[in-house]
Length: 372
Ligand code: PLP
Image: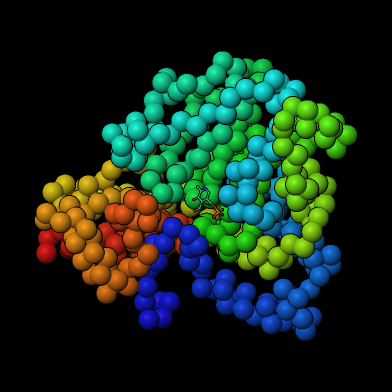
């Protein structure tokens, strides 16, 4: 099949707009008539800095990120950042007295199944927690925090815990109250670009000069890890993301996606949010129209607009029914719908590059399959 024949609902990496790939292919061969491809130019060149600066400015514009935040392009994926955020905020914890890290999305709370976020009132946060970390949209199970948690709002004095969120799968799909966060991070490969770049947006007040970081000997004494240089936000910030060799091609692709985003949505992320919500609604409506045939596991209040997870319960054999669903979908060009390998089921990932028509096509297929 050709690109135009398929709609890809894979969980990541995701599709990219064809026009971005076409421009990217040209840039790989000969960037701006320099005779040299973009991936061959030095990351120390003016051209590289220009791409980085423009991309940062466009991202800030899309998401209304104020000047009090720094944008870092890093490597190591969401997985790397999960550790790096902890490494980087340790110094601040020490100052505040190290307390618990909270992990509170437990499959046990939904009868062994996935798909819930416990009521805020039941969260077991320690008193005055130093840091709270949460995953804003959980890609495997398909649950999403509908709003910023009430109990983590900064107080009237602006004080509150350090709040860090993983937004790998829902960044640029909704407006976010950026000022409530100490840091957010996301891999580029779902809504922003290619695999290989992870973006960190961090409040500048958490980027102290190196000398105010606890010295390595204190860190060792406290049994705390010393972050590898490449994961130190402060180092990356000081070098405008060019401490070591960064893939400028990957940043360029992010820039192209953001440029297109800004052209398409004059009201920026709110424009995309309306489309993301509409696509999700179309798909959920189709599933919910046939409660005998499909079952959405996540609770309605927290089900993800981005990773739509459901089971096909047509007949006695769920596995067989889902196999047929996937095969028939594939025959219609609807691909990447298989659920996460650890859970099975169906997962339709509704990233920004899935067009409205793609969601309509899937919704139509879901209805037709149920009635067949
Ligand atoms: N966090 C979330 C929410 C994700 O969806 C993923 C990947 O799918 C990750 C983290 C892991 O990211 P990476 O593969 O970039 O390490």
